[in-house]
Length: 496
Image 1 (cartoon, one colour):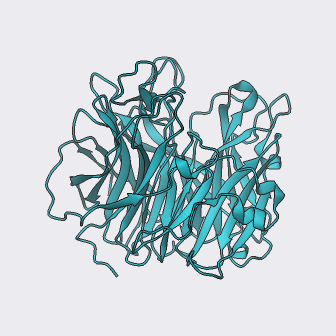
Image 2: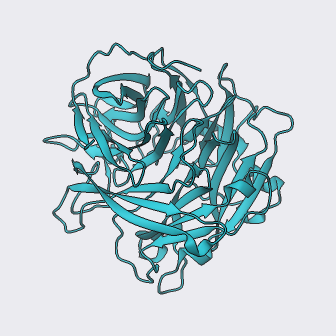
């Protein structure tokens, strides 16, 4: 079947309404020391708990009572400090929490580094129960410098925005390569396969296998426009077919020519790893043609500036926050239905005819070989709210749900979600998860990403986390962001 494009403009009633949207407080800034603006809210739902991460700490919540498992958030480096891995004690942000549904284990992946020396650190639980008295972590550190490349001054490229995905044959992690000596300009990407089978048992893993684009990594790279790869991450308990390659996807930003504002393609990479004969591993690029889009908040004269989302503050100097519209957003959610394989991903796009209003574009890829675009749509049910920072997943009945932030000049940034059946995506339901009570007035940075996952036990309940402010954050006051965790299910999904 060729792709079909569905522009989701009108909010329609749908017989398959979701159950009540329940939400509760996650980690907030007062629980973190030192407090930082860089929140990076993400998490995953497991068999017994929800595990949430913010930039330097994590907390687990019982998925029935929503009560925290530990009296206070755990320091993000704790598993590595306990294992005396000294190279993993300086968290550099952009951590990803994952529940390996195929093994029922928790996975935390974080970048660590100081003084131009970088590591990727992974902790894997020995149990699915974070409240267990026997909980412990298998911990690993992977030295990155040899695969990151360096600029003409010898400075190793900064491994920015790492993203982690679970596949049967490996954990796959992607990195943007940023040139510290050139205002952190993006010059390429590196993707590595980590030996999942041995890591799950606490054994010594095989050396990681990595590929770059460009290859070789240049010492003086030009601005790279297909950055921020998202690895496919298995949803549900049905694995991909045996031998199936891992796929990664990224945006193709418009050419940096000062005038072009649109693109009509995405990038897709197939990563085949061979642990027995590494020389047989491959990393193959292709392009996907998609309906034309303008990245959220895109400015052809200043393409690295994606700050256009208004808040309700009356303050003039900092009333726009960052949509992070120059990239696709995690997750690249994969589900094997047996009859077909489905990949979902989403990002922020420009939707306003006369202003910079943003909405959420989503794509579904299908295919037993290299997947192709099956269908897509844009969530933009009104001409007032800006929608940004999305994350998408689907349940076992083929219902998709996307969570995101909303804001405009009359509305404090809050959190909403939309859901629809992939068999009829013209019928969409949008509901609030939580309304914000304040603005972030002193910085433009917001979130960086969020996370939508599906309960691996009932295969129906969506869990989503994102940030908001209860009160205005202004100069001289402590950083005061909050996070909210919401969960809901669609009535057409039969819980197992």
